[in-house]
Length: 87
Image 1 (spheres, rainbow, N blue to C red):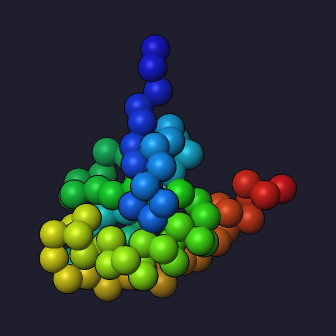
Image 2 (cartoon, rainbow, N blue to C red; image 1 turned 90 degrees about the vertical axis):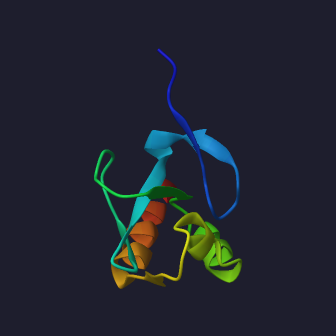
């Protein structure tokens, strides 16, 4: 069975969905979410560089179709997963 592919909003590379962090906008705040959680989703590599690229290109506002702010937990989750993958 084929693995679902998604595109990172930071680097624009296609990767398996399981390798990416899912984000949703909840009342104007971007937060992490599990697969299947309600809301419009966007995906980001577990890489701080992708997070910074997405933030610099205003990719979050485009992905969620409106002004949003990035919750601090997103930075923490990406940094933690990035660190885990480097081990």
